Length: 93
Image 1: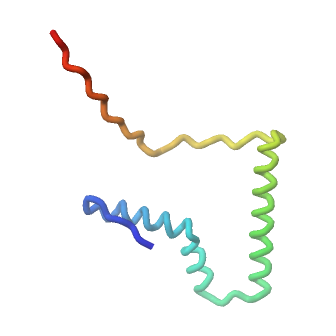
Image 2: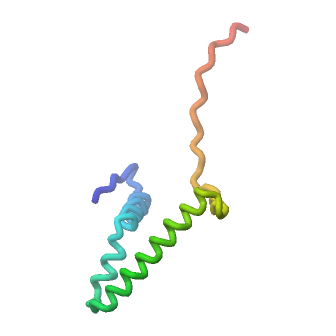
């Protein structure tokens, strides 16, 4: 996994790296490998994950069919980047 550091901003690069690792599931895997997981515990965990996935699919399907209301979208916390102004023609005044 690779992250570019721009303008010596290591904090921002570290934040991006953590986000990528979170998406890939590396933190979850590291936590799972800390200790031995009994086969019965593994089956229970995987069954729970399957139930959560099935509920998520059913919820999305119900939203598509209009049976339940779609969840409200959270307002974006990212700053809106200003676009540079278009060059104007020189005035004749």
